[in-house]
Length: 71
Image (cartoon, rainbow, N blue to C red; front, side, top):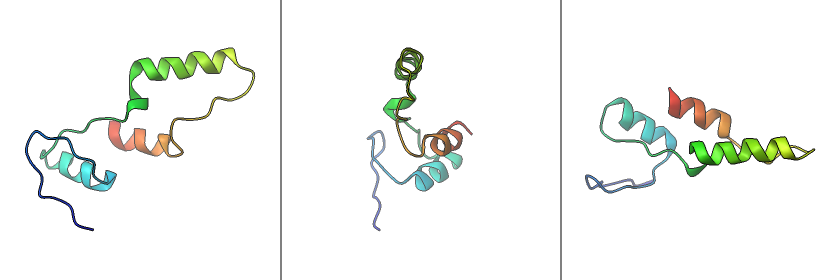
């Protein structure tokens, strides 16, 4: 697909592969998804501890995304 042109300082949603490529070349700053916020993760943890069943995960690919974004 078509991506760009990009304007400096304005957030834009792009595919993960492109965001990681731009970040490696120091061309952008990544904004993590909302569910990666410490407060949100603590809420999920607390909810998991209270319930007898498993809590649904924030994203079906949360493990892969987290690993890619934190590397």
